[in-house]
Image (cartoon, rainbow, N blue to C red; front, side, top):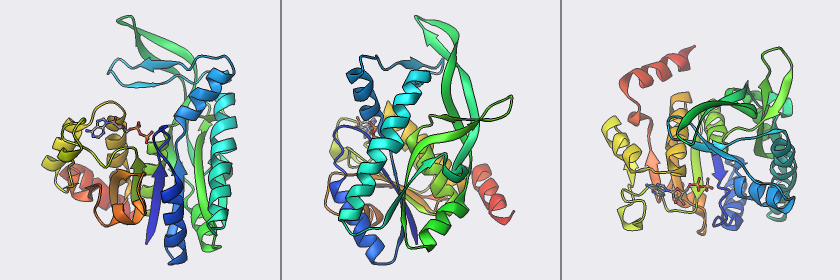
Length: 290
Ligand code: ADP
């Protein structure tokens, strides 16, 4: 069994329990790929450097970071720099032989660079240029499998390798949940998304309304309707993971003892491939035979 674990980047997420759990799973012989976010840390570093993080809203109402050149530099320093190294260091202290990889290493995560984005500013639609972001189109699963087969535990962070229209590559930002989703899809793995809430709640403010599982398109509609703000992106990422071939996606809390083992045992919100509409499921089945 292969498990892809994504540790959230919110301030309220403590990775300690997850790292100890990665160590137990690895000791039991499971293949674990750890991925992480870190948006809060990027914002904090930008502020320490006297710069303002920029967020933009798409015409569809989705809020995301605008990654100008300077932000991209800070992003490189923080994500595959400090955050990834800290996780690798902690895993070594747990007895795990961890290897840090950015999406650019060995073309682990590759896609098209999107240098201009459509935004809504003061109620007006505009095109904003100079963005360093991209959509992941391919995963070098072979690289991860080679690293895993060597007995190492990969710790993957964005950026990803973005192809320029005129040729060449630029390291670009991509959503960490979607990066984790692409990896889980490519490996046909279970994806455990650890965050600061126990799962997806019917009422986002009421933990007692947690949705335990969804395995049909109708049940998935209820999950989509419940998710607000950042959780919307996680649900989109979960759908991409399942479409790509992941065997399940579980959204669960990071702030627990053995959060991964508990998530795999059904503690969070478990989404199964059955949530995909028939045409998606058919595509996935077709994709699997190609
Ligand atoms: P991370 O940084 O761990 O990736 P995010 O901050 O992106 O996590 O997403 C988790 C947040 O999503 C929660 O802290 C919560 O405020 C919000 N959220 C929105 N809708 C829901 C929902 N239906 N159930 C649970 N949390 C929700």
